[in-house]
Amino acid sequence: MAKEIDGSAGVSQFYGKELRYKREQAGLTLEKLAEGSFFGIGLLSEIERGNRRMPPGLAQHVDRVLDTDGFFTRRCEDVREARRKGHAQYFERVLETEKDALTIGQWSPTVVPGLVQTEAYIRELYRAERVPKPSEKIDVMVQARLRRAQLLLDQGNPEYWIVLPETLLWQPVLPPQQMAEQLEHVVTLARSGRIILQIVPWNTGAHALMHNNAMLLDFADAPPLFYTEGQYHGNTIDDPGIVKQYRRSYDLLRAAAMSPDSSLAVVEAATEDYRNGAHPHQLVRRRLAEE
Image (cartoon, rainbow, N blue to C red; front, side):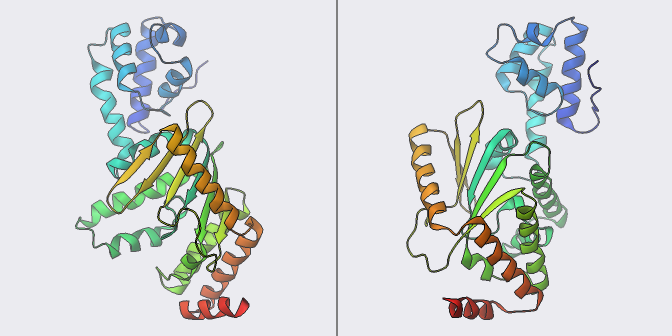
């Protein structure tokens, strides 16, 4: 017997439940509903469970087969908006695909990546930008980013490999105790196997991807994607040739970084220093003395 769907859990679940209801009312199996479309029963099943957004082309096909008078075509945009709530529009494709990725590799040269940020860190980044939005809107954006981070805790989560510059550890975005909590959060995720962490030493010199942040997403049943962004824009690239070039650069970057074990030790040491109230210039002097 199929598991009951909680249609009140969210927009995706509501329309997923409605799709199953209409399909079963018409006496169709998933295989029959998929016939004549370019979409498989796996996608339909995921949509019914509220896990995937219905593509417009599939919505049109479903409306035609189930004779639902354009209901799913008109409403699939609601699901899209619900998933994007609190996030920039240019980030939409990453939001839609990252939970289906096998691996996500990320290079973040200026800030701790969003998937591993603490609430205090997120709020401070928005505060620094003096975002001209009511506090309620800021709360929505903060909570959206925290919900996205659930990706790392869910069963069957992607393998997440992040590379950070060592200098990022010396940048006190928050007061010492809160910086310690942010770094400790990263350490905890690495210790639990939720992420793989590498640090590029401060004195590495020229290295790959110095001019870009980078995110590479690999999938079991779809071509890989590359994503990069600036302050107010983002770009998702699926051209195989360009993605291949960025993958080579990312591999070169990882080769220049410390091993995961050594990287973890460096972050743990910085965490302890912040716990003890050390200031950034003290951390820098200590690191220089170790060279």
